[in-house]
Image (tube, rainbow, N blue to C red; front, side):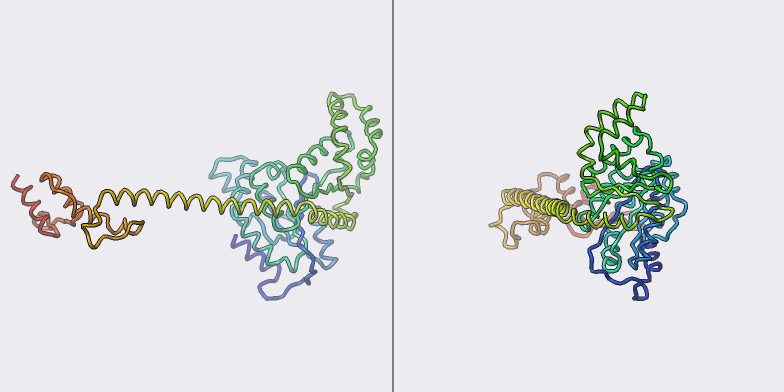
Amino acid sequence: MAAAAGAEGARTGTGSGSSTSTSTGSPTVCLIVLGMAGSGKTTFVQRLTGHLHIKGCPPYLINLDPAVHEIPVPANIDIRDTVNYKEVMKQYGLGPNGGIVTALNLFATRFDQVMKFIEKRQQDCRYVLIDTPGQIEVFTWSASGTIITEALASTFATVIVYVMDTSRSTSPVTFMSNMLYACSILYKTRLPFIVVMNKVDIVSHTFAVEWMTDFESFQDALNQETSFASNLTRSMSLVLDEFYSTLRVVGVSAVEGTGMDDFLQQVAEAVVEYDLEYRPYYLKMKQHLADKEVRNREEQLERLRRDMGDIAMDSDHQSPAADREDVVEAGPSGLILSRGAGDELQEEVDSDTDDLDHQIRNCRCWFTPKTDTRCWSNSAGQAAALKRKNG
């Protein structure tokens, strides 16, 4: 993480005390970019980064893909600077997906440091772009993905950006599969959601928008499908009809750069939705966790007091305090100071063996190097040693 911080400072110019961008005064917006493998997530992040630089609002870029060989734009924070993906696979004996999950888990344990870096730059960078691994399930359904998402959403306005390959969604069955996945992510993250239909330079996204707004049009397209999955798709289309009504959709081309202004407009609307509906929920959840932690600490402290009180009561029953002027008051420190010395005064000597064991516990002994005889630190110990010698 220290290497990531150093790279971040070198790339952004924070070390010289100057910034390449001016403060916009707007709240920081975190855009978590998700999507199937090959949908164009990283290319979209690259194009969006260039577009924001042209507008004079450079973003803060975070790469969470530990298996990528190289990224087209320099990242402010790169998981590869913190976790070695190949070493994780070697040490834990994991495959590619298991290595990515483990690398994300290790990175999530230090994500509080990432939050501090973002907070330091929030006056200069309005947008924070988070590029996730190519395997969407690695981030979406893992514990590390949930930790990272909730950490960002509890502090900054956070929007989920789902990138979809429009050219591969011309089939109604494939389109429905993408929409089902988008719906599951929406209800899992409970954050503002934008569907980015990428690669409109190959196939226009107008057919998808028509399917989402006109139920009959989608049914007509399904009638041309003869596969078994078409029957399931027909049933699921009725369920997703309400999901479509509140969904934000924008068509972009990561290669040509078209649709970026429309996307930023959708982001602005999503931020308003976050402030009205989602921020109170996350603030309430954050306060609930803080209150729960305080209650747990109080319960642990109360148990400690109760346990220490029981020990003090037992100590009072065993040692008559009235017979000793130097007794220490009952309590944790009193128990520590009086233990050993007080017991030695009140303990009766029943046999030679008991007396010897007691003295061994409370006296220091050692062997002289030449005579190999045992030496004691008090006269009682010498008497005990003499008894043992005489048999």
